[in-house]
Amino acid sequence: MRRLIFPLLIAAVLGTAAFFITTHPKAYTALRGDHVLEPTRTRDVENGKTLFNAGGCASCHAKPDDEGRTTLSGGKPLVTPFGIFNPPNISPDPKDGIGQWTEAQFIRAMREGVSPEGKHYYPAFPYTSYRGLSPDDVADLFAYLKTLPAAEGKAAPHDLAFPYSIRQGVGLWKLLYLTGTVMTADATQSLEWNRGRYLVETAGHCAECHSPRNALGAIISVKRFSGGPNPEGKGRAPNLTQDKTGLAAWSEDDIVTLLKDGFTPDYDSVGGSMAEVVHNTAALRDQDRQAMALYLKSLASIEGEARAPK
Image (tube, rainbow, N blue to C red; front, side, top):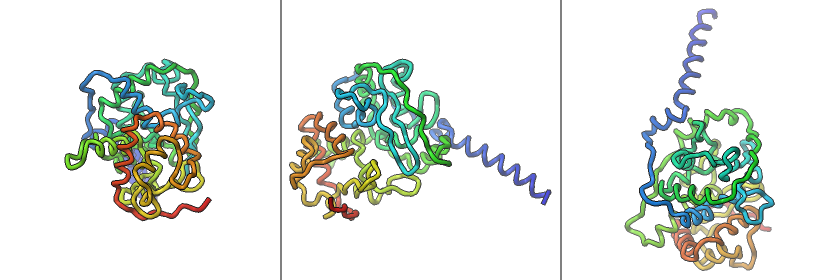
């Protein structure tokens, strides 16, 4: 037995060292062959505002009692099966927010999920979708955020169960699931369709709520957009594909109306977290809502769970 103790101890030490080496942000980036992408054009603040609204940044990060939705000192806690995530301050405040961040640090956070201090962000921050944004668009968003008021206040630490509380472990998750790169246009589709896909898949991160997930919290790719657990913990986010449990009976105009006014074809109105989404999409240009509707109507049918009647 004593002969086994030393080899087991060595194996444990080597295993622990391998875990921390391979899951360090710099190491996993090197293993994936990622490289920092840089902006190529002048910053466009108006485009940044569009991406801010498409991404629903205010829904998570705005102070709950802020009617203007521009005081980004941190929003309501997000309760998940893994624990409670508290959205941080992303205002230009130099102490509590991102006022001292560089543009490069912001781009890395949005695309790689790494903080300026070199720590992994949990994927409750949907950088898995934001990864598809171009560095120019991320830079535009950063430029817009800097025009908003600085707000004091730090969010409480996340309250997560073990082993999810080990932040370094997110590096393993990224090696498995942080895939893809900047979304490029599909030359076989129209400009409008490509615009809709870009907004839905990246900034809008619609799949993050409207898809089922595996035991590790990653989207099940073959069931993408077929509906998922409601982030608020009750019911389900609906199927967005052309299945009978989804949008098969909806027209593009029906989707546009919902994105603008929150009304469904059966004269109902959305509530909960989707009402927050509509608050954001209502601020988009008509042509962007139309493009999103066009893309959503093009999604192939994937069978999903029927939603329980109200």
